[in-house]
Length: 499
Image (tube, rainbow, N blue to C red; front, side, top):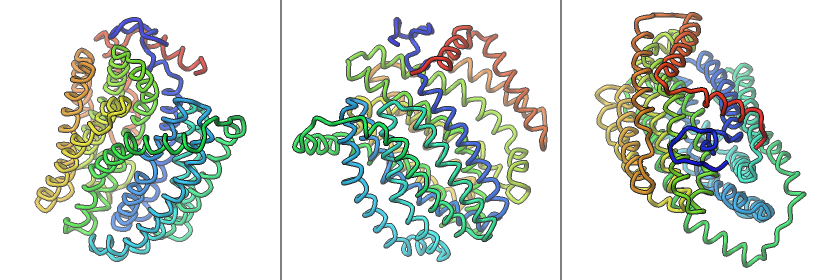
């Protein structure tokens, strides 16, 4: 759909909001979140804080490896296929002949460095765990390539199936082997076998498109396109991705290295996993926005691009500001309900981490403007400043305040990044933040925080509290004029129609 005005709220303006892809991917992320959330709770309860800390630190390095072999690297497949579907065979050749060998090299380098990593973190128990985790990298790399190719094809349902299948299979594999072996290594072996299986499933989902598509490019054309994309898009995006990943993992590493309490990494890791749950869901906004934003900027339609970004920011504020309010007011009850009394100290870091990670996600949505505009290099100084601030603040605060200091560092660095990203997008397109929505959401969320603080609920009653206050929040937004009939009409259209 094309917008008829810039900032209005008619359904015809909701090119992004009415995208079925956004709804499908959001639903898939939500399902994956629930599955992953349950598995992390079970693992935390079974492994206890200290061993759970080992698992969390190991997975933080696996997340880094997933970035190096996915994310900014594999997004090239979505960009190529999204621009021209006849380039699908080309993308697949790149995946099997270039990307897979690259993943193998990354795996080898990580395995060779595992002992040094364990020594730097002052815990030799990490060495065998890092080795097991590294073995799954080639599977994860090919899965990422297939996932991004499906995104470029706008095969949102198949991409959603792949995402949910991967999360469910990894959860079942890890939980089952921990239940059998009672060890951290069991969780990592479960992850290894699950990633191999889900890679094969993802390839099966892509195969019908591969069979039906033929490429018209010659070898020289392919090589020239690949070199150009690597130079102008992939390498700057990879630098940004590395800096982004550093900003959300260095806090855990420095807690592991600098904190004196042997349980600190496990307690902080538990708070991080809870705080990352809403962040994971919010990724769907940026993912679904990116193809539409690329199209608008490629056509020189800056008005439409700005309308898309503003609508994405509006949805983000409506959906996730109340999460920050509720987590802030009920952190202790939430941790006790989900993780048990042993993890109750984690509640101190949860509100700041929730706000910090969600701000990082919002920053990612804003920085997507420059990536869609083929200028990802503009994101490098912003992410560099965020990463450096988080590192320095953690190094300063963790020895004094323990893992709470790390949470302060993440929240502070994230706020810096959102502010800079907003100014950067403003200079390119105009103000990306709907000020009226921001004011109304801030008022409603503040009232929600106050009510949740006064209404102390524990155990299962906490779920009832969330449902009641969530309904109150929605009614308050209707009363304030933020949610209108057109919003519900748009949602009905999105759910019913095919992309």
